[in-house]
Length: 108
Image (tube, rainbow, N blue to C red; front, side):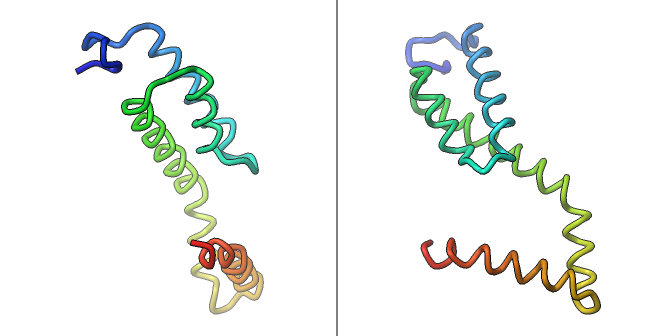
């Protein structure tokens, strides 16, 4: 089974280029205040990439980006959690995160 219905099992050079483009878009937009998912969808559409494989590819590179953010900030977040009982700044941070999350929780 290939990447495209009419493709062979071997990925084409263009598939590698598309993968790099989507990866760069994901990497650039992950830390910006824009939707990296939306940017991937727009890029996929602009490149004329078919659904199926490229949807799965987009999900997987987003998973990788999310895991990278978790690894990057884990020690800072864990430190704040441990300090919650004794540090007013840690409690203020936790309250800010909860307040920022509320609109998504209500809408979702």
